[in-house]
Length: 167
Image (cartoon, rainbow, N blue to C red; front, side, top):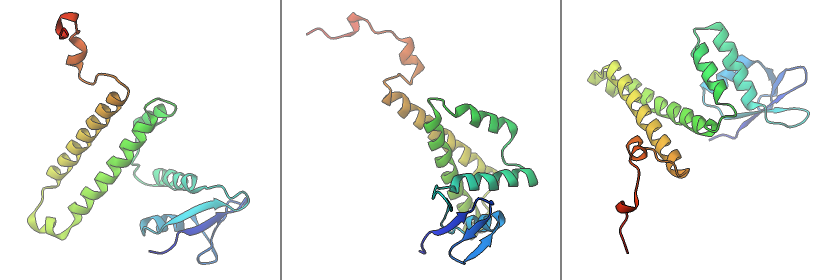
């Protein structure tokens, strides 16, 4: 596997790809993403990592140009998670969901599945079920780590001294 490409962003907002010694556009960076090329965008002056902000800029441009992936409701809900105690959990959930979706998509595109006639609706239903199971598991783990009861029936059943064994 090749080394991570370094792209320098200059104060004039131009991007310079050090691997090819040439200025590139955001569309070129998008092509790097699509081709699974490892890269990092850094501020040419300070050396700060600007990869995430550059990727967000590409997403914003794509959302404006084409049929958007993120509805206003989704974006508002994501914003609400910032600063919330569940922010880290939501981040992990989104990352795991995306990985699961990508794995399922790879299976969906495989020639064997096409040959066997896999029903796309069944596949999407399976993905949704796996996401729900993963979300439930993450919630249970979160509650268990924080000493909270995750089963509402357990919360409704008070414990009394008669329930405890006498020694």
